[in-house]
Amino acid sequence: MEKIIEIKEGFTITEMFDRMKVGDLFKIPYDKSRHSGIKSEAARRNRDARLTKELKSKMDLKFRVSEIEHPGYTSVIRIK
Figure 1 (cartoon, rainbow, N blue to C red):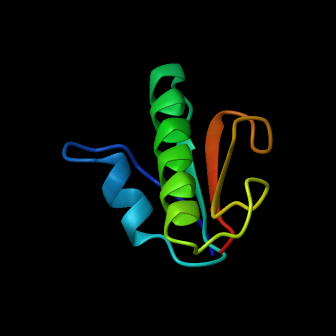
Figure 2: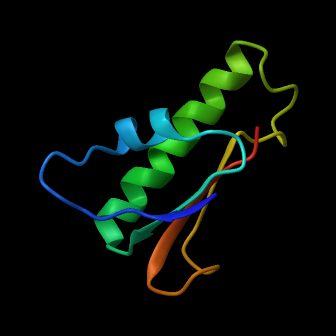
């Protein structure tokens, strides 16, 4: 499901990742510092999934982040 996230008071990146289900695509208005925070959280969650054997190899991903796919937005998709 594709969803545009509005940035309001109380928005947290970790809460956004917790709410995502498999196949969800969230678009967040682009901001350079927010984008780097989202990339870091996605990398942490992918690492943790590898450590718990949810993902098989280093090439396997649970979350993917892109700033190019939808111009003006940071796109986050949950793959697994």
